Length: 323
Image 1 (cartoon, rainbow, N blue to C red):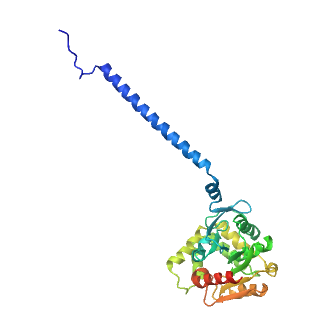
Image 2 (cartoon, one colour; image 1 turned 45 degrees about the vertical axis):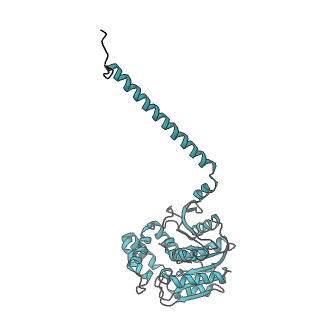
Image 3 (cartoon, rainbow, N blue to C red; image 1 turned 180 degrees about the horizontal axis):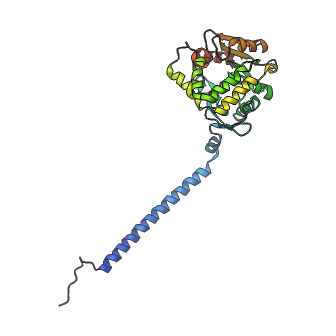
């Protein structure tokens, strides 16, 4: 009688063969999946390459502009309409304009604010902190964003940058100028420069922290959080930049440039400004700039864009409408 085979039992060879076949089928399925993924990736790459124009141009522009020597300058560009361009104070950055940018951009104004080299999010090249180079950075911002009919706002050190820009690059793109808590057109006494620099080199955080009450005013009623926010801006600025920029402020003489500002000029300053005393700065500028207007805020400190932000913003809007 022939022996019957039990088909439920596999020989060792049959088990190996079945395992090999199963492994081959798994590899085949995996290869098909990889082929599908590769094909899909190729389609997506093709789509991206087929339409680079709008997205690519925007990505290339990004949030930076190349300054005169290629230094990358961070900027914000909010809103549409007539442009207003903000230059911030020494040691701070474009964040200081938060309340003006938010309000004005909602009222049909194009607001542009940038960080000076070595400040905020801009690059820190370790050089170029003289007014000539800084004016070149401002020119690059205006030209690369193609701004025309600009209301140029210079705050503290930014006032010197704005004046030097107009002197060096002309006023064709500038419709009006606002100088806020400006620096002196000339400093005869440089005795404080060395002690100022020594304070920065010895304990920069403590030195900056001690200066915040003078910036915001000791009786302005600003919150501790606001004071900390201002201090944080000071502390992220490059130590090299703040020292060199202070030397530029101390050594600059732009008196000869003031008589040539043949555009509407508004000077806004507080009579409690302990950083740039009114009689030595805003008052002298008003006397030297033909046809300029000096608007004094009673009781206001140097940090007028924060402590008197509502009035200050209204004055900017009014000046843009009247200029």
